[in-house]
Length: 585
Image 1 (cartoon, one colour):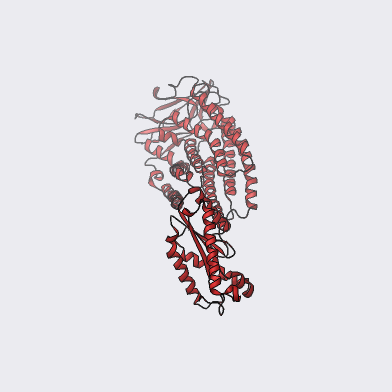
Image 2 (image 1 turned 30 degrees about the horizontal axis):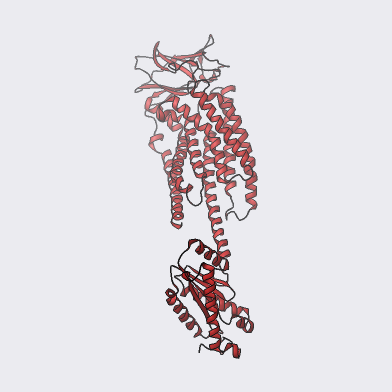
């Protein structure tokens, strides 16, 4: 229905306008005082001057970045200590990060903070950013931090410790992660916007189910970006829940993305293989969730297997999309732009795969070959996630363009199939189809059979171009006279048909009189031919079916035609219905 299509176009416009409006707002947020205001007090990076005790060996006055755990096993402990510098700070605090470790913090031998020791042995201890308030003391205080690995290879190095005001430390934490914060927030916002509008888009005429998968992908990637950059910890205030949310969003991305590929038509020849991959990915997620919540194995143990799975499926998808993009490029009729839906998705997936591979390599290098990263304010995963979401937007846009083009083509082809090219009214096929619908509906109707007199004579004497003009003009007269009728068609040659629903034969007297007046007006214009015609009418009460009614109207038309021939003397004299020949008298 037309109003449904108009609503869909309006909502699509609202969707992209709303998404577009968010971008400058988020960019302005980059410069806002919320996350870019300078700290009120100095933030001190306590990277050096530490005494590090590990495996019975003490290292004095050491840099945290120089420490290497060298294959730490579960239960092993690293203790670091140093004096807090004498600084004039309001409500001083320290902030540092740990991975899969239990933590205790002491000040002058007194415990002031504990993390992870309430989690049973063998259970996963999530990564965490620790904000520890330092009680006000006279003079310098001896700070000691005990970090106990909760599992084998929990960490390879130590993160930097920061000293400052708690509010300033929090603002610095957010400011360093401005880019992933904005990208992740945008993707979640855009995904929810798509999810809200998706029912209308899915149940509309296009039946585009890929929009729901686009919404899920955008939300999952946004959540993962926030979790990967430790921002979920800040918002949820629950390290366990933020850890589970991050891993679940990451593990769910592959099956959801394959679902998008299948429903969007991005793949054409490998639906069975894609479905097998999607089922395997979902089975993997279900197994991981069951094992994690049953307490057997935590989410993070499956990370290496997931990386291998992600790499293999990404290569397969890239190969398939490259072939599809090549096919789409050869199909010049897809849309009027240089880029196709397939190539847009391909570029986004390529950028995503490259970015994720770089990030995965960096993750393993930093974890097993080098010390822990102390910056962490930029990651390629954020760039890759943004690229894939933008490509999904472009892919949906191009598919919408393709859908509209195909719809217009279908309408055009339908018009060509059921419209008479010479007159612009319905052709024989359309008339037959309409009569078949009347037979099924068993409605009340009237049929008018009309014959244009003298067409053969005009064609023979004046030429077929004049005859075509005669047919075309008569078709226009019929459309004007019978504008309130459901069907005005040309059966072929000089034969025409009119059908009006819910009417008796007498009800068409006004329309027939309008046709007579129109023909007389055209005949007075001095054309090289005159519009002379015969007709017959019959209604549904006079026949068993529409074919019988039409045959009755057609026979009455021939009776009138014979009468006209006798009146005009055409049969006797052979004169022509052209100017200078036979008149209406």
